[in-house]
Length: 174
Image (cartoon, rainbow, N blue to C red; front, side, top):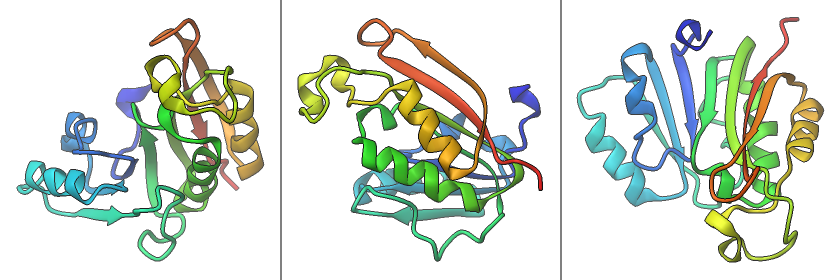
């Protein structure tokens, strides 16, 4: 299924230096890279200097997606991997909510998020693997509230038993 995923117009949330987008860059026509770090985005610029149609989006607040850069119903795919596990639940909710209107109907979003259910309200740096408080059920609630269909959600061990989750979402067609 993932080899058939339409990545023509892709947004990577919390892209850092773009190491995950680099793995599929040959399948992407237009790449949006969003991060809160200007330094990381500068490294991504260097990484993708030969690739046309890369749009770099700085959002220093780390909350949500700026609404004036990506047209509504434009993206074919959205993903975040290896970063959202550290985000506070309000930031996770904002990215799930804000990505929905940007996706084309039938588009997919893949989010790697925390499933660490201990220490709510505590510092993420006190938790194994710096996982922030989030649960699979809470994430799925954010997704369905935003309008997504949940295609699949898998909990797995990373820094602690059942600490991580990968969830694939789909924007319904009409």
